Image (cartoon, one colour):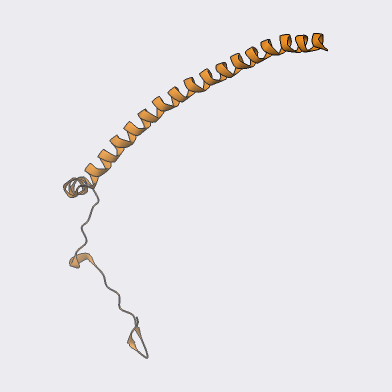
Amino acid sequence: MKRVMTIVMLVSIPLVLLALVIQSAAHYSLTSELRLLEKQQAVLVEANRTLLSEISQAAARERVEAIVRQADRFVPIGPANTLRILIQSAEDGLDG
């Protein structure tokens, strides 16, 4: 019985060390992947900040007006080019 326990202990110690090495390799791989993902996230966050900045610039009233003035086919809406259609029913007068 003592001999079996000795053999089990002699086999289990290297197996535990092997499991520890495998776990360490997996941890290192995940840590490397995490660092890569964090770098990609930082790039995406910076791109989002740039886009938000451009959107806020475009949202400024003066910027929008300048873009509209540069548009070829833009026609401002006013009373001269607005057509109103009134539909009258036979019973009520005005429909609505």
